[in-house]
Structure formats: C-alpha cells, structure tokens
Image 1: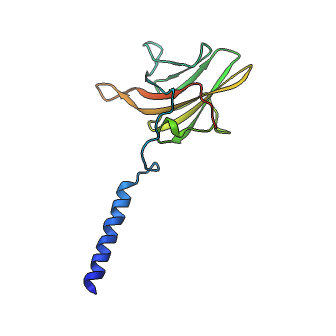
Image 2: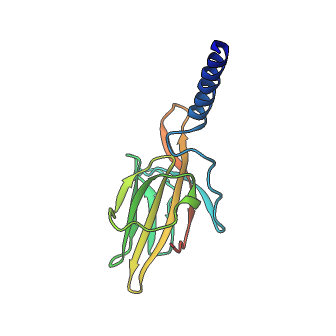
Image 3: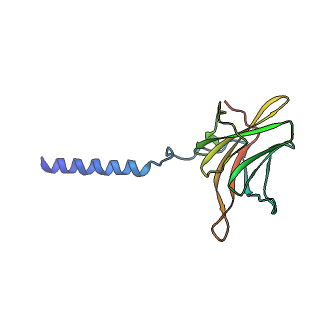
Length: 157
C-alpha cells in the first residue's frame, strides 16, 4: 500500500509540474493566426533629426514611435486620431473589439501588446489594429524601434 501511495504522489507531482511549465503568464497557448490583410513593418523611433518610419493609414492619419518609446498619433486638423493599449494578446488576430474607454493620442509601446486606433473624420470612425511583435535593438543594446503587425481598415465585431 505504501508503494502505491508513493507512486501516486510522484505521478501527481510530475503532472502538476508539467501543467505549470506548459502555462505562461499571458494566458498561454499558441498565438492566434494573423487575419487576412495583415501587414508587417519595422518602425524606427523618431527624434526630429533622423529618419523614422511612420505608419500611414491615410494621407490624414499616421503614427510614429517617439524616442521615449511611445506611439504618437498624428492627424491633419480638424481630424482626430486616438489609440488604446488593450494589453497582452496572443497576436493581431486576438484583437476583435474596440474598447469603450481609455482613448488617448499616445501610449507606451510594449512588445506582446495589442492596440486599437480610431480615426474620426466627418463620416464617423474608422479603425486599425496593431500588435507589437518585438523591439528592434541597435548594436549597443539600445531600443531603436519595434517590429509591428497591423491591419487597416479593421472592422471590429
């Protein structure tokens, strides 16, 4: 009987350890496939003196990454563009809805996080979704931008 209990406890410990190792902090599981129309871009930060990479939705709306590693929304007056960081997601395909609050003109760039952008013009809102894949690191170890995936237009559920 003692051998059976020892075997049972060992098996239970191994299964528990396997479960803990197989789960990650961000919800675990495989990343969600990219939706049709996904684009990829390496965005370089902008300091006003060097060339940066802007993501242009239209002639009136674009975003860039500032040296303090924040997305900055730019739009032609009187139009307005805003963004919400929706937190960690498992890829661009995980972003399905638009948030009801939290809209701002700039927010921190965070690898593994998803973002929804909205553009307000005379006809109402149009949307884009964006996922930050990873940082772009220079040879001295500094952050010089980010690799992103995005979709515009994005038609939320």
